Length: 311
Ligand code: NDP
Image 1 (cartoon, rainbow, N blue to C red):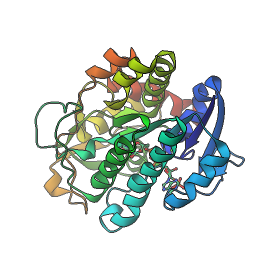
Image 2 (cartoon, helix red, strand yellow):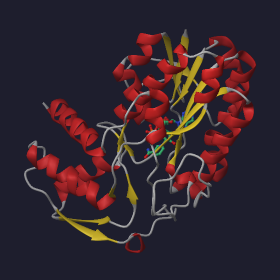
Image 3 (cartoon, rainbow, N blue to C red):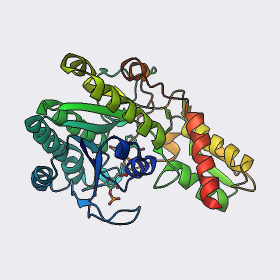
């Protein structure tokens, strides 16, 4: 089995490579936008902003499974670059789906809580009506629909509030600012479940294993969209406070800054974020036998990784 990993240098892509679980399951080929790998060395070039370039690459590599961890993820910049975001997150995903449908390959793809408007007050079910508030969410919804419409075997995993010990994310920003400032003002009226990339990697591998063990009828029941997020709930303010609690306990920071709760209105951004980002992940365990742990577990693991990498 040949597995193609797209977006090898992103938070999730790097975690897949570090974990080694994909490479243990087949011949792993990795690709990035320019072929340069953050982990060192070179991989294939797969520029998702040029969707028409992808079929030739796929024809040459002939993957049985495509894991698409590449995405345009600049939520605020997308407001100015919606066409580009839609090419990467929408059209290119459709092209992967068309190729996979024709060749009988499986596409594993990731989407976001931002496809919802955040106006409800209970976790979103997989089939809840979508209604993105901004360009990034719209572009990701185009991708979901294009993949579904392609007729390819696919697993689309919506996730949220993604972070890791590496890459650009809220946790790393907080640790940097927390070391510089006595006080941080953090939004306390957006609710979600911070999800570490290793949870996404493990959930994906569990789902892939279940897929590979299944026959056609069973696969039909597994295919489609699922919610792969950590369990539990907090706010960005709650997440920041927990980060600093762990950082002080693990001696990563000498002292915690004061974390002041503010409203989204006090921290305006070009893109409006949903107030409610919680996704109902109960179906994931039922279908794939993997129970997403509470977000605090992932935080603890990531902080311990940071301590190890600091020494
Ligand atoms: P990152 O932003 O860390 O990584 C995305 C990767 O995609 C980067 O390596 C980037 O390349 C690559 N990429 C961007 N544009 C292109 C392009 N034109 N061609 C090829 N590669 C490109 O994202 P995450 O790992 O956090 O996200 C993984 C998935 O989870 C995505 O589908 C995302 O939409 C989804 N998600 C993420 C959330 C989050 O909070 N981050 C929340 C909810 C869902 P380069 O390194 O060159 O910039």
